[in-house]
Length: 323
Ligand SMILES: Cc1cc2nc3c(=O)[nH]c(=O)nc-3n(C[C@H](O)[C@H](O)[C@H](O)COP(=O)(O)O)c2cc1C
Image 1 (cartoon, rainbow, N blue to C red):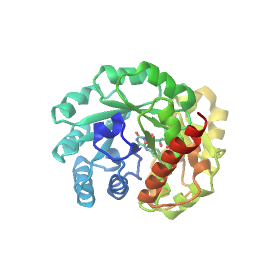
Image 2 (image 1 turned 180 degrees about the vertical axis):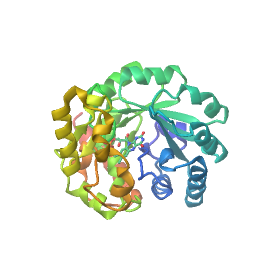
Image 3 (image 1 turned 90 degrees about the vertical axis):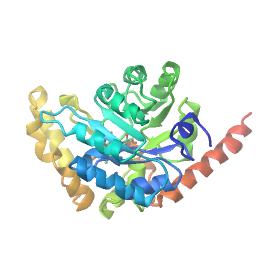
């Protein structure tokens, strides 16, 4: 399949694996890229620019296909060493960066000067238009269904994607709720040039996370996610568990008075415990509603091949028959 996204990134299939904290290591990114998609290493999971440089080198040993690095710009009192991370990306010869969070404008000149393509992840048409205006090459449009941070507008992809298609000139991928060939065909019909998946890629053989995480995703239904941190305007969609219920109880009882410190026990430092040690009650971790469509743990190649076969059959078979 050829789209503006496959052309832009030099990949075989229009499928991207979004950056995921403590999931997006070289093992997963290289497996996705080797299967013809675009794998992405999560920059900030590496605790220093030096460690990111090593992870990039490790990924390069595992694949000769294009892969990217995610840089998430968070509001922080003491921000991570972003200049160092950007340097590691440039010096590591990475040619694709997925930015997310705050406006990436400050970093674009350095990235573009080195021929790096930038895809910015956004949850609204106005942010997508801003990304286009500042010179991003593409955007990843994350609907309300998505795992992680869906923003505060709550617009699902059925509306958000066609709105993005009406407004944008640069190509975009659909993100949030994407799982299979049906998702890809729907995304293309709504105006996207491909799709980005997060949660679905966690339940793959190569995802370097504890088996308990993959088992939880297979067991979960579309009813099992919760929105946390709404009162802090930092909404996150997570899989429900005891810690999440406790957190939501605090949100209800403290109301508008709630501070990050009140819920730090349920959200800070949770990822290594969940993803690496399989402690499923350790705290809140991002998960999309798409968990309801995840029923197995294939390899990345099996997953991507299955998606492309199903998409082609849908387009040539079911859809063509309606005409
Ligand atoms: C466990 C997990 C961790 C994530 N961490 C990040 C992150 O660090 N930076 C980021 O930009 N997006 C992050 N995301 C969002 C994904 O890149 C992607 O946009 C999202 O998962 C798409 O929705 P889906 O899960 O329905 O496929 C994360 C998602 C999950 C499920």
